[in-house]
Length: 572
Image (cartoon, rainbow, N blue to C red; front, side, top):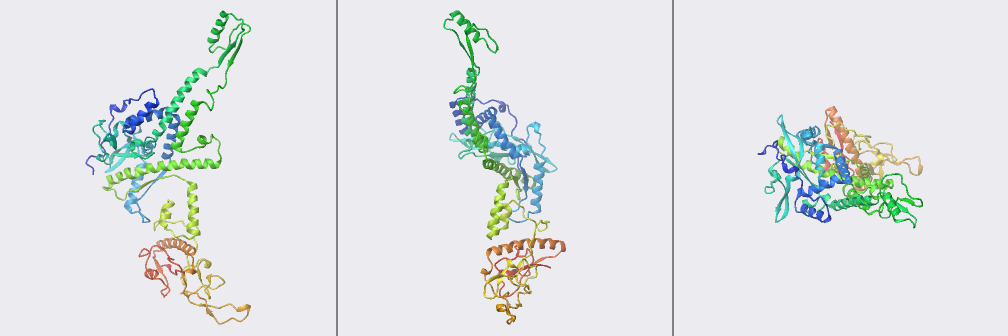
């Protein structure tokens, strides 16, 4: 139990939180350079004031950030119990996973007190994809003897900073009292904070915020907007143009100029005869249109904002015109970004929040469950399935089942689970076994003369139990007399060449499915699965060692376990 109870808040409201930073109103390239330099030197508060201004004045930036944040908060998620490898989770591990899932699913934070529920926590952690850093304080409550995280609160930038070392920023620190001379380490407040760091580049944390790369584009956009507004004042109204006769006297000319100047929004005017009045309107070169410099500045900034946070889109790269293939590529790039963001948030939750929940309620961070987002990538999953089928089924490449379960995110079944097996082929039929025989052509043996063949190739009679017996040889040259019976070769020694690796792997796959069927029958009938094989000079040492042993007693992988393996499984 920590010395400081986790239910006591660390960061409390302070008057300095509402104080505006000293950012000049009139931004210029020099001003922006100064702000970024101060941020790189560790002034988080000043840099965040710049970032706040950028979000408040750039609609495209706010839209993209909200799109990314909402995309992650809308993802479904699950909490998996701790189960290393293919082992079944312990009862305690399953209990911990269920406890954590219940807490995160039913948080009732005081939103009106600026407290975040779990979705809000994910949303707040996503601030780091733009600002590089997001720190939240966890609010705990003690309910019926359990420590419950009722919500989180965003730690203001006035309480964050770096411990300076030789005038350079060091580690990220807390300043609960807003006193820059009293940095505090996060380790002093165990279980109280979630610290999210998202690196947009290498280097020190202070320099990795992605908004730093967008700041020059934002400034160009703001200056472009200012210049465009100024040009609108100059060229926004139509030009009033009047041609007057050359013999018009000065008094009339002055009167005509006054009338044109004071027309304003009036839709009428009285001019001397002979005066030709024209209103010049329309596109003016260098003032309006797609090539207008100020609009280009703003479009370039918007495109850079798209590139950094969501990747290219059809509207940002192809001017709204694109094919289905291009749309798919751009969507994949966007989903790649979302995968990166989801991975970052899950890492913070798994490394900080979940261990705290388990340690506070169970006394130690043992068998901590795992939080996972579910980001569907149908095309990627289909590609995996097709690749695995070619490698492991068609080519017969051996692979561990645990790896496949993890790769395809399928939980391995427990022995007592009710299994869905689909279409189950017949169980493998080893030489002399009593289990139901699978299609004979897929279990090769040797016919007289040494040529490989299937057991059923040209044979109507099944091999007798035990692998012995004889078959009558067919008459030569279509004759009616049969020669003396000769051994069929079923029990003759064979080598590995009589069964290919692909055929062995196919038999193994059928054996695994047959094992699941036997497990279900054993549970229903109260029986036990035993390893069984012929005991003769052809039986391998590994099979001899397993003969007669129950499932789980020295073996869990079903037969066959090697080329030409004759072992099987029986229920007793």
